[in-house]
Image 1 (cartoon, one colour):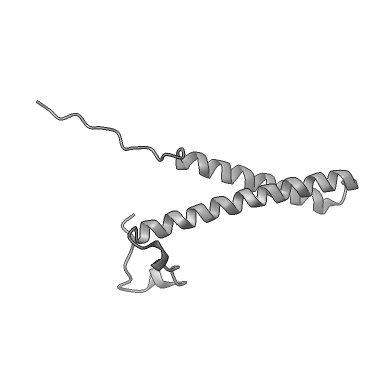
Image 2: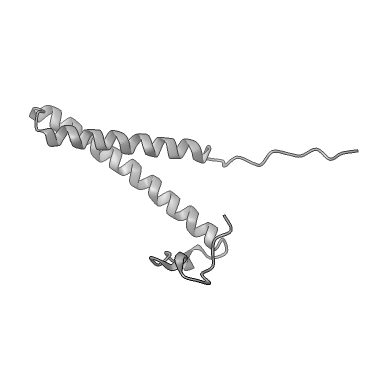
Length: 102
């Protein structure tokens, strides 16, 4: 009798594709706000609202980046994520450099 295969578990906080899409959408909106503000055609009230929205978008993007960094640290060393270190520039290009399994 063949064994049935189960589906891989989905992350508890939603799919990573959704998180990436939200990050990209927030970043795109932030870039559009910056462009509009740099054009200098907004009145003071519009500028303040755009600035407030921009700060919220920035914080959202920064939070997403912090979460991604934490995930990478855990992937590098799930036993002790505090010992993870950033990849030095060019380290992956050196002969004999170890590569991540993904």
